[in-house]
Length: 244
Image (cartoon, rainbow, N blue to C red; front, side, top):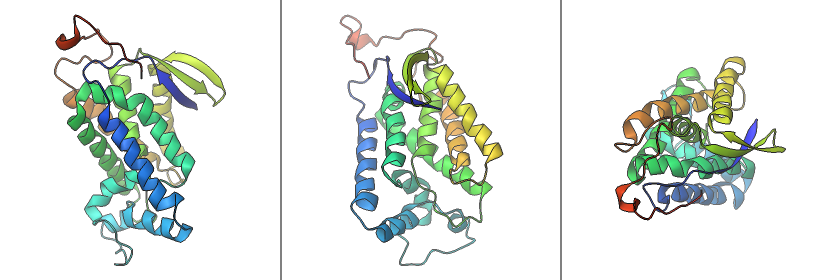
């Protein structure tokens, strides 16, 4: 539907989005060593060993010992760092790059990391609940990214975001226009294509978790829905402008 390019949203509480940058770096590194630099057979084994498999998580099946890389409970998180191909990785990391820094700014470094991992885990859980007998590994950061998108639109619905509409037309739009359309698309696809190759339930679970958690995990005093501009005391006299 659209590709995010840039948002005109300055950081107000942190100087550098260390967690966002680190998550992007870790995702790229994992992709390089589980997909790009390795034979296809090794990549498939990594997806099985690190991916979230509902049938295994719900004890309907057992993974062969030689394939198990991470303990079953840990796969609720590890799956979110494994990607199948460059474009799978790039699309997720682009969303994280554009929207993650401002959510991290609103929450702080540690809480944002916790928020990201919880959204990933809840997305996997929703996927598992709707496909508990599935033996196909779920991989990709989309559940966590969906949580970030939901938090962003609740925090900053009126911020201008440059997007490529239909991957062709560059437009500056208020964030709520493309992001609410994107969120609606995820739930629509969950209804019309529940068993497709894309886990829309993972996306939906991440959205639900992100929309709920942002109310409790944001910094004290950080407003919702862009009701007012908040400038931290430490920089009130000489505000530093930084574009993401």
